[in-house]
Image 1 (cartoon, one colour):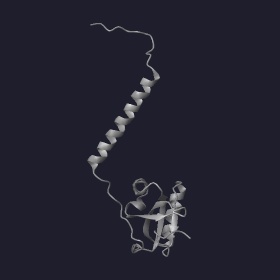
Image 2: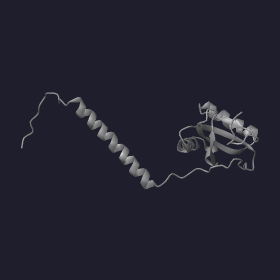
Image 3: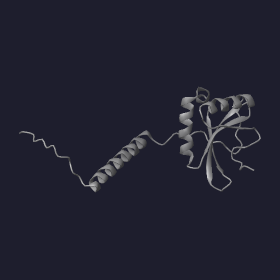
Image 4: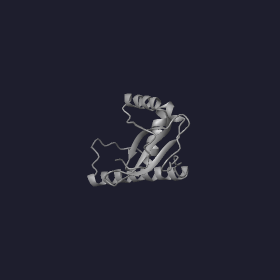
Length: 147
């Protein structure tokens, strides 16, 4: 059996190409869902009560973000940051639900157990890499609305 070579360009209607791309995207999404199900439910980060007990070294907390897309986003950001910053890797994240001023639910990502100097130092380190950070003093509870 010989192979016949044709030098003419392949002509496929654009709707067929779009359908093939859409099928490919759906196949990738389905494969990711299967892998996620096989891995089991995501391991939830420690969720703080309205007034979490500060770790022994200090009552200051460092807020690493506030997310309106659910706690899963906060968990993903935690995994990324704790992988990049060794000083975070040994800590336990606090992910708390709260209401923003506009009434929307947000999830705050914080780590506790800092004195003021250590919290400010960590925020300075994060700022050099353009990662946002807020020092939260001991009197401010993570689930209290601002203001």
